Image 1: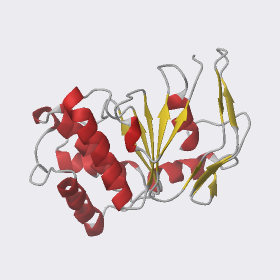
Image 2 (image 1 turned 90 degrees about the vertical axis):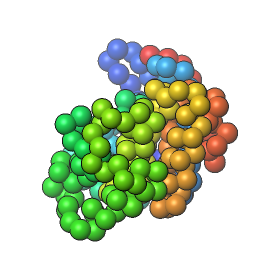
Image 3 (image 1 turned 120 degrees about the vertical axis):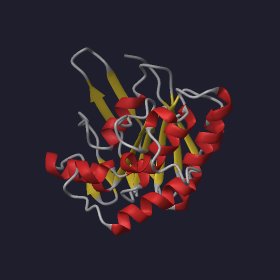
Length: 216
């Protein structure tokens, strides 16, 4: 489902990243482990087509992101890739359901219809937020906000889910709960999951682990 050769990336600042080949199948999970500044977020950017490698090939669900046009990359992120962020990236002026459905309002390649709305309700139930559809973001705990973000990442039925430090802003007691929820939900829909983390407690939950060394 996801396959890369050795990837190399460089910034003008002198930052360099080199990652050995990755192969990930449907439903599998991978933890990308490393300290802050090591390039974990950069790798996620490469895998979703937001960044371009200086050397190497990246293929996701049959799409060659290495040579794809900007339009193809944008369409890939909208239709085949879901993302979960450390800071949740929820819109305070929208309720829970509207936040989950936000990708359909932002991307013309997605169609907001009855099926999408039904799927959003089902995902909210799956992440433990049934009945919270009309609540505002400020009424939610940090753990509940991340649950909304997980539902949003899956509402477009992605083939690949990328999560950047998804437990970083959570209390210790919630870290394992949210990590396991993310793993369970993505696995249940057959999506591959890649999580960037420096939290050693959640690493054993994943099928595989790679270490990113160095620093910015």
